[in-house]
Length: 199
Image (cartoon, rainbow, N blue to C red; front, side, top):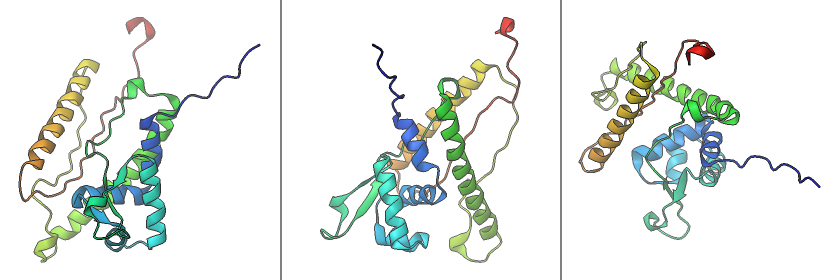
């Protein structure tokens, strides 16, 4: 007697990608990264969202393990304060990604790219204003490059950038007067894979 094949178990990464593949949730996560803690009512006002719509997305983010409540920051028992579960960011290795990972990652990257485009547009618009609070922070930049690398060099570059991010995140936690910066990094080969006999 054969037993029915069990569907593959959903991984934490898949749950996170599915949860974050929504532009509103990307905005919530980015805002929480900047504020560290935020009450639901403050988030609704900051993001200009109806409280019921925000509550729906907060529940989804909490269920996906992206955010958690911070009751110690609440003013009273009715106050709901939220924080990120982790500030470590998200990495998907294309070489070990499953077909489901690949499909979910496209939804995630579309939401992230939309957010990056809007953030960059805001920086460009604010550069031409005379309002000091809207001037883009030093270091805001768009970097686009086409590189010729071996797969080993590409992996080394990815690891170095990952370590640099970790290092600066650690420094930022120990430094006063920091500002919030979005960082989106994509490294992908645009070459056709070599023939099997060359691999």
